[in-house]
Image 1: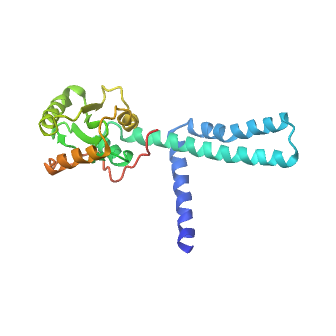
Image 2: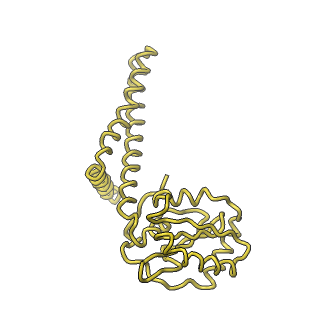
Image 3: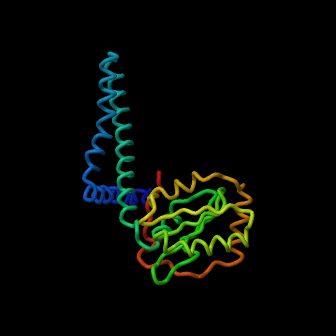
Length: 229
């Protein structure tokens, strides 16, 4: 009990820090949070008056509105804070690795380490294995990273010739935002079973992965953006 009591202020302090950071960097965050909180309360009060509920039911309706408002307010804070977190790392070398490590769960085998890197430009290619097959994520301008992607595609064709290889681009000339990357990966057509995913991942791992350093610019062990919605 004592340990749980000690942890509670830490969580509250963390939430307060997130709120302060979000409010400082996003002017629309506070108005949206207030709207999310008071909106349900106003709605339930109006409904209670229109339906002519007695005092007890009126109080229960208001309490329900407050609880819903608190939930929506916290969801709004999470949404705006997540957006800021992604904007702070987007475009920096290693951002894709950080998101892969923290944003994909379930039937996915990923690594924060790239499978190919251009040491001069810090462009990189990351790999994930899931039910859609193998997904290569190119981090960098399309023209510069195209050669790295092509080499990885040829390598995968030799190692796992019957497994689909999907390519996702994250860079200045890509329409896909970093925060929507994992969502886009989950939407890919699923063609492998869970057992096949494990078999492909194990085969790629057993053949060895290039021992490449994470591109300088971001430490994925310290950046943990929330999951994209």
